[in-house]
Image (cartoon, rainbow, N blue to C red; front, side, top):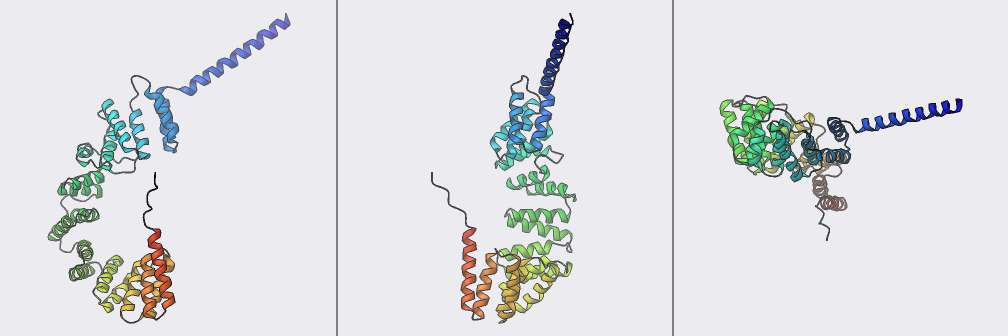
Length: 346
């Protein structure tokens, strides 16, 4: 009797363990919402393939859980699979037309697919930063407006992003800076002039006009605008570097030395003023002094081909042919190192 009772107790214990194991296994599967949350956590940790595997399982359930396709789109976006990401976001919006994050992310994706006109209606409805992609819909919307030549709408979008008044001179200058970055040069000039018409003493406006003129090799205009900026912002190191560049190109070396010394005092960790000052001193017939600034720039950034090229010119002016040849060779080697690699043959 005792033996039978012992077997009964053992059987009961085994059944209890088996039941508990089965419950734990069932709990590990969890509800669809719990699985989606697990997929989100995996994606946040960078385990994109594991997260996608869970999403594929959830996608087999009908009806599909809202949020699955949006997360799929976010993962595909991170993997740079933009066409597939767009399809996933579109599917998410079919499931839930009010899914604002899917709406915003589809707009960003369409912009990156060079389809700004299609992106604009989606982004116009955006009102939050998309943290999952580290993008601001207002900024992307402004870029889309640029691409379809709606420049004033772009200004309003950028103004909202920066917190400026939509018709303020700061909004015009900020937009001009971004227009110039996208090589909309003529439009940038128009916007800067509008800003100056509102506020003739607005900082950065004359500097931007000077930079544009410098890029267009219009040296007299560049100098005039940069000198005007100097009167408004005399502690701007970047301004003095641009002005020094304009003076060097104009061969006004003494003026270049004056402003480049200020640039170095204000921005001692930038190599540009040292290189330009070395060039200016060489042009003034003082290469031995100029070489010190160039060597300092080379120590700060050994991989700058411009520094080595100018060192070659300066050493040549000093009669140091071997050193000059070495620097020219280094400049050429750096340039070739940075050349795009040819595509591998199939």
